[in-house]
Length: 276
Figure 1: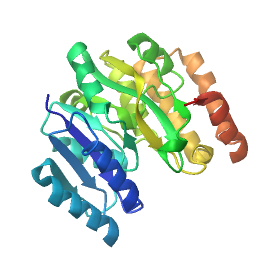
Figure 2: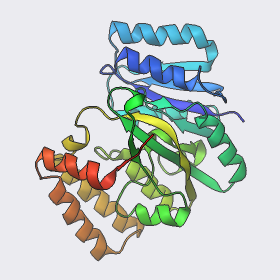
Figure 3: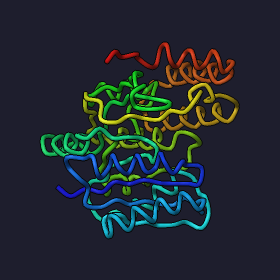
Figure 4: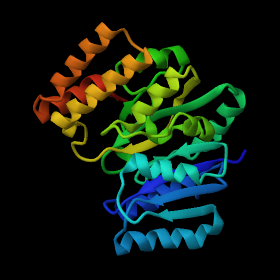
């Protein structure tokens, strides 16, 4: 089966991380993509651009690079790239994460066995330095009804693992401006349109989270984004309005607590330690 890997790259990425991500997409995969779409979200530094050029020379027509004059943000960059994807199925990937060698093989098999599914992802292990330290599991539910229920309170997919049907996503308007939550917004619209979704139960990617990333998800800008999320859930009738308002208040409170408390909450209640 032909499929496209869609990524967006901007100047703050580390060349080494990008190189590792590309290696996991191409060199290490049992089932390779026939197309990789890479959107350059604004000008890159010399070293990062050199890394991109090296992969272009290596992969020829497999890697198609589309530079944007200015940095427009992840959602808009992905929308631009989505328009240039040649295949029906598009697989997302971030430029600093590392796929498991069987990621694409498992996802292609899932597509063959689940013809009604239009969006699905998988489980991830988070790490800060190397994948040898990847011992924190970010789990998401696997069944449609479980995902729909889970989406009322939390994002039901690990975005960097997701595969979706291009035409369906474009039909729904693609990624829309929603500060910090473009993907969550999109998944709610997919569910609101009654499309079938799912998730693999296996870990298919190691995600680089960076030092203290979770603890920085706070402040008034995040509360504004939470309110936009509240209004969307009400509009799509995905959640009882009373429950939606209560959840908004709870989530907003956590956006105001000190970073140390927020980080501990993420690590204790929203993540699971695994033993290898």
